[in-house]
Image 1 (cartoon, rainbow, N blue to C red):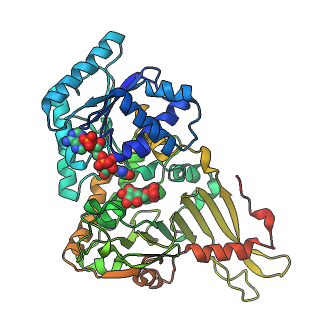
Image 2 (image 1 turned 90 degrees about the vertical axis):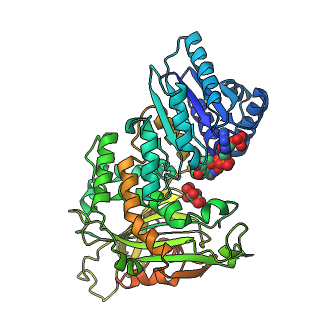
Image 3 (image 1 turned 30 degrees about the vertical axis):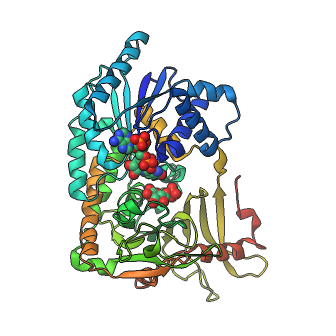
Length: 508
Ligand SMILES: NC(=O)C1=CN([C@@H]2O[C@H](COP(=O)(O)OP(=O)(O)OC[C@H]3O[C@@H](n4cnc5c(N)ncnc54)[C@H](OP(=O)(O)O)[C@@H]3O)[C@@H](O)[C@H]2O)C=CC1
Ligand SMILES: O=C1O[C@H](COP(=O)(O)O)[C@@H](O)[C@H](O)[C@H]1O
């Protein structure tokens, strides 16, 4: 891998501590950092270099996915980390930084390859990038890359403005917009599942699929982020980015050996085929919810409006469910149901593909069949279950039987590790490209407007539940239901237990 200088804006912040430093450390241990690598951490706080390194070490012990047990590795890793005080709004600080980085590159005869990672509030992305240009930091003889955290804009207009300001300095191929869901192993697996399994490839279309459900349910509430979340809500925070990215990854049809450009092209095609919602259709296709007080893990928890920092009359959505249609050759007439919410019953990110019932011709005894399901568990545990119908040899009755694969998470690289590694290697496959981001904002824009104009009711749901009743009714109107965790679990438990254990293939 090329030698590089990794300039980290926001090095003293929460994301750096919880995700970025542990990810870099694990990449280092796996020998996936270049042999010549320097990280320059930036922040306004005053630190001696050794103090900052000690703080980084602490973050490794607290947040690394692997136990940090080898003091030599830690020492080597920390020796590559520097700290420089920099105020984002102070042009002179950038000039000093440029001198410092250029001097080292010259002294060591290194190429001018520079990563600029924006782990700061989004209001600072634009000013930083202008200062990078003005100071000469972004004028390099090697390559330069910009890594941008979410949120990428607050709506379509602000996203376009932000993109315009970044693209004055960085080309699209130099811009890596992080969507950490794209770094999750099972999301990355979607394209492989489809093109490497003829059986799935054959079924991956409207002829066989009845509906697709994508759920990202969280048990946490707004936590300490009310300042951000109360101006964002589930639609902006999760739906416009993570949920639509999962939809694109699932629905795109890729040829084998695709490049990052092919992936970007196919994802754009999905977004272009997504049927736009007319204002008058929004209330019938979108459910907005907000959590009320309830019980989580046996403990009473407050409702959203009573969370610290939330406006007492807030109308912010903490839950959204929607029915979407992709009007292309493969997916026309297949409803996609997408939902995400906070303070739900369980933490689950899951895709369920429900296949069409072939008819009842096999059930001579009037037994009912359960639809075949392909369940892709994205997190917290990654796995896959294929649910088929079989006759129980003991009872002679037809039963739904799960064929399950689960992966051992402890050795799987964390999303940030995967994404930072890809970015350093110059691979933008699993990043959000501008076309997709813009089309996603375009699609959600009428919903944002309808929410603002209060044209969509806000359904209250108790914390610890599966969300508002209206979301259940959204599917019932089409003759379907959400494949909820407890239903699935009880069906699986029933089907798996005494009947055909050899089919319950669980790989540790
Ligand atoms: N935390 C998380 O889990 C996630 C965060 N994100 C995104 O990542 C970004 C960073 O979030 P997070 O780490 O939580 O934020 P924090 O508030 O914890 O950290 C902000 C960082 O920005 C620095 N900073 C703020 N103002 C200035 C300034 N004027 N000059 C120089 N540095 C400045 C702070 O340094 P100092 O105080 O030393 O000046 C600090 O290092 C945001 O865009 C957020 O939306 C995305 C997904 C998850
Ligand atoms: O980006 C975000 O994601 C988290 C959920 O991520 P996960 O990996 O735990 O599923 C969410 O809590 C947060 O509000 C949002 O900003």
